[in-house]
Image (cartoon, rainbow, N blue to C red; front, side, top):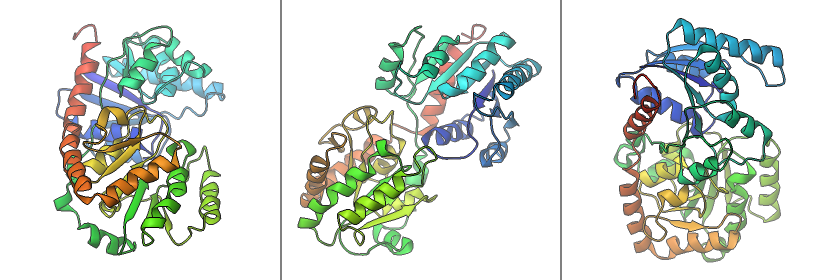
Length: 373
């Protein structure tokens, strides 16, 4: 089976890019010949190429640059014909607008991976769904249900992402205390952390707003926010800093910025918070669980499919700083419960290996190719 993947981004900015990397790593010896077409140039081009996978760059520009967009569609179609590809897989809905049209020109089936919980309100989402697809692969039950409600209805198989569990093996990392020392974090008192791109829907401000209640009982507690500025919301970082200053938390909240060694940062934390609003899935939740951390996440979207509330984690409503504070304090006050939740979290994380993810993804793609199914 020869599969072309059309990828809009060429730099690892979040979970979607990591998922492609995991698929490429784990899917190299699975009876698939991969060709990855990036719609921009960037570090991931060489990274994927280093795995022995053929990569191409077809710079498409923005949709409003219509001449470049059309040229990219024809170029992708030409590559697919030259390579005798069996299918075009488009990473994210925005890519299906170009990759799906290219598949039509090349006379090939196409699928796309829906990495969001979609709505039928955005015009471009409806446009992407109108373009023929054998299936729209989804990554959570929430996303599957939402996509199934958008007309025209397409098959929506579910493939959960995975986590490179070997990177999040507690025994292979420094101890939490050593990690704090290495990263220059406070050595004493509880450390509550959150990881993600700086966007309002990720809820970093909710954790900041919860900190005063934490500090009333644990005055030596600190909060660390790990994540860099997002191009679509460049002002959110300044909003966070203003909120921290307004609440008098400059000494207690650490803005660590974009970091690459995420396992060590999470290892340093006593409680891990994921405060997103209707997170499509939440790979970083599983990464923290794999380290045996007591985890708190939002009670909507993907996290509800990962966490059993009160067993291997806690779920709280998005935007509710008081309830988030109560959940954090429960872990800090009830150390035995925190420990048992961490053990159960690590066990649950084992269900989400990158090997299982890659195999399930490949099987799903294979099943929609007429000549192979």
